[in-house]
Structures are given as C-alpha cells and as structure tokens.
Image 1 (cartoon, rainbow, N blue to C red):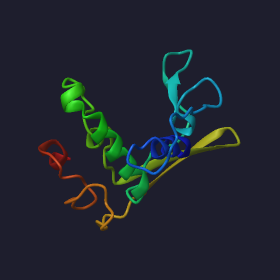
Image 2: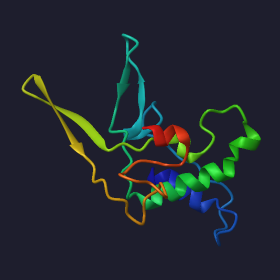
Image 3: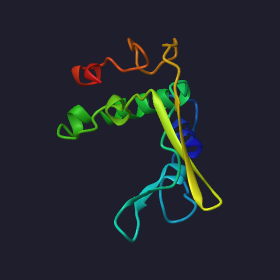
Image 4: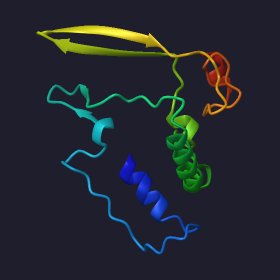
Length: 139
C-alpha cells in the first residue's frame, strides 16, 4: 500500500512534484501483497493476509476517497457495482482470526469499539455502523 500511496502522491498534478511517470514493482507474481487472494487447486479462495482496514486508518481512507473521486465511476462506468469507496468497504463490528499451532487451529474473534470517533470514515455512523444508505442502515 505504501508504494501505491507514494505513486499516487508523486503523480498528483496539483503537487509541486516534477515527476512525469512512476513505475510500481510488485515482488512475486501475485498482485496485492499481504492483501492478495486467489483460487487454489481445489477452486477455493485462498487468502494471503488479513483483509481488514481499521476505522482509524485516516490516511488510507483519505487516499481511497481521492482515488474513487478521480475515477468518477458513476460517469465513466455507470454499471459498476463498486462505484464509490463506500461500496468497496463494509463496516464490521467484529473481527475473527485463527491461529494454527501444533497441527490444530484456534479461532478467536474480537469486538471493535462501538464508539464513533471524529476520524471515522463513515460520517453519521452509530454504534460503529455505516448509515450512508438504506442497505447499510438495515445491518
């Protein structure tokens, strides 16, 4: 994510940067780094890392808002189901993980704090849930 954020900032036409182009390199064949997923030999989705963005990742959410604003999918791809950054993320109050040790897995889950902080990426949220549309309010 850091390399993509740097490339985004360096190529911002409003910045003082005189960089004309940026090349981002990915180690290995699979794009996405720790956030990658793909299908294994059995056809099941295999996750590589934890796909969680905590609500206090202010800079990451700001970057995603900027990217989606520039994409302008409602105008450029009206049928796209992920037309805004809000469509790309789902707020969740509980995170589950499993740890493998000595041949068996131990699952655990944790409840995220339900307080709304000023830096919340979902303005107007209550109890840690998004209220941006009727679908989210039903959750």
